Amino acid sequence: MGLYALPRPVVRRKIRALLLALVAGALGVVAALVAPPSAQAAESTLGAAAAQSGRYFGVAIAANRLSDSTYATIAAREFNSVTAENEMKIDATQPQRGQFNFTAADRVYNWAVQNGKQVRGHTLAWHSQQPGWMQSLSGSALRQAMIDHINGVMNHYKGKIAQWDVVNEAFADGSSGARRDSNLQRTGNDWIEVAFRTARTADPSAKLCYNDYNVENWTWAKTQAMYAMVRDFKQRGVPIDCVGFQSHFNSGSPYNSNFRTTLQNFAALGVDVAITELDIQGAPASTYANVVNDCLAVPRCLGITAWGVRDSDSWRPEHTPLLFNNDGSKKPAYTAVLNALNGGSTTPPADGGTIKGVGSGRCLDVPGSSTTDGTQVQLWDCHSGANQQWTYTDAGELRVYGNKCLDAAGTGNGAKVQIYSCWGGDNQKWRLNSDGSVVGVQSGLCLDAVGGGTANGTLIQLYSCSNGSNQRWTRT
Image (cartoon, rainbow, N blue to C red; front, side, top):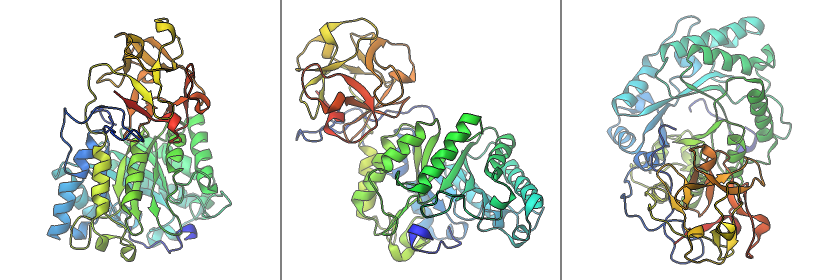
């Protein structure tokens, strides 16, 4: 199983809600960007806390466990999205060629809808968990069978599924960056493209995702191969809407802080991203919080799905990787996740205030109190002048003088950050994150003091988020 060091077993944005604000920091180290919570109390469940930022926090559900009252109670209470663990896979939905069976899949779907949850579809085309009849096919016959299966399943759930994992795990582990040698791959290198085009026609309303594991670390060959494919698809108009990162972190495939860079870089291609099968060996609270904050820092991160409810429901229970113990009690990791989700839950104050750089101690400033469109903002000694008073609006704008917006002049590293007459574009909308970063909604890049500068006159730009002190800000 490559870097997992384990055989993979058989089992396995809505209207913008309240934008992320930042927890107030009194210590002056990694202080938050906004005042202490006042407009809204923290939520007490994972799904409700995630929904405040327009995201979901979901769970993988097994139909045969819904009769377990502890399991069902936790799942209904805590999560606002559901993925069927195995019930929508190929062998479950089409056990005999041309004979579809949705009994188990519908049980999961109906339970989710009855409990007010959205549903992710998982998965339509995969080398694994194929029924025997499909395994026996090859070439054009297998290609047609794949197309027929996608149409059959998606037609059954047309208009009902928020996201579909159209293709699952098509890249090989290791350093080759090659496609996995599977019966589907042997039908021709275009099989993934065909799957996505078929899916778009079958249900134009569903987000279409590519899903894989061991692709969270930006430096890995498998990640780069997947990135190249998504970039190619976007350039050629292949209908791909999102990329799923399974995020099964363990000692063989550990969490790396560059995961946020990975999410940002894929989002910059014009696709949404999602964490689709999260579990972490030993359930360390700090790592769980890091993963949540990585998603919160990327505007196009749709949400997170935990791959199971309790450790005893996990596909690798020996790793105790989930948020709930076997008896249903909450782990410290649960509290860490809830706190991270609530860290951006309050409405920023409407009154103006200064925005101070953590590294420089100087404030976001419009040079010479200019009101001219295109004036690049800078760092300058903090004062109470109108050219340093920024108001964060419900639309996610940072306004100065009342009618000028903080505006990104581009979407790439080094793009100028300027003032411009407010017009409602995504390049004038910002997400304020609990780690002190300010992220452009359109670009996914961070507000950055050029070159790590701290002196008066240091210009402000967009740059890939790095958590450097020149990218962290506090608000007074």
